[in-house]
Length: 335
Ligand code: X2X
Image 1 (cartoon, rainbow, N blue to C red):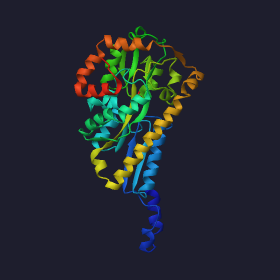
Image 2: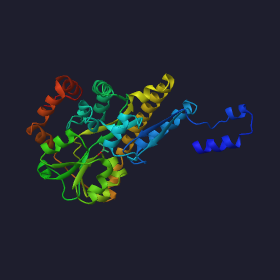
Image 3: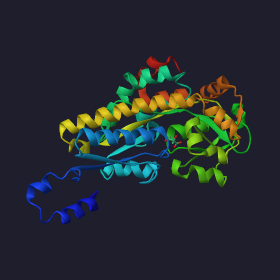
Image 4: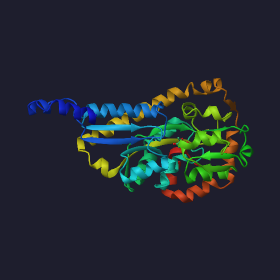
């Protein structure tokens, strides 16, 4: 864009000024960066690019958002720092990882809290999401209203099938960098290792970790089935991405541009949720055909193991009565 402009400016040097002014290809007034951790083919990346295209069109080219998928700008931990400093303008991040900065943001990840997607979206588009966004707002970031889906998380392994909590004993499982994840897998008797997603494939390949847990769509799109053998449908937590913005950078946009950006990002979040819902219908069969072996699990036993280890009581104390009360009002009694 910039070099094109330069060339056309040079070529147009002899033209009267009005001819230059009416050139259609002018540089955007606001060049913004949006980062995520998912492969470029993941619906998250695809729908973010669509939002960027619509935003450019609706602002007549004034706001240009460049999408950087797949942790191109750094790991999640690095990109969160860049978002805070303003070097990155937008970033979709798991609430659980964001909790390293905004502790209440991990609350949707409490083990076995959500029974299905209806409960998830009612809570995250409702009181629970509203509470978390308010907490995010207190820390120099803005969270857009509509969360993006990652999914219900399932455990994969390269060494042995995980069917009962006892199978997790000493299991070297990669978890994202987040206290809730570590605490949960410790409570289940495993040996969790915190690793950013950008390093997961190689950590599994080199057996630094035996297993990991992620939604099926991500296991498929990031090709984790190439380095994993078994998949256990534990659905032990639901996880999604907040669309975060650096507050100062966002405030630097004119109000009408802010409204367009907000509207289009929220619209793409809903499109992405629908994409994941569609993919969920076929992804298990596809993974089976690629050689992943699905394992029957005793789901209630995992929940009971968390309860017996004092997991719910601990986290209730950490989040406090207000937050825990909102969670339970959405999902029912947990502890
Ligand atoms: O790091 C992960 O496993 C991922 C991609 O699911 C999250 O962003 C939490």
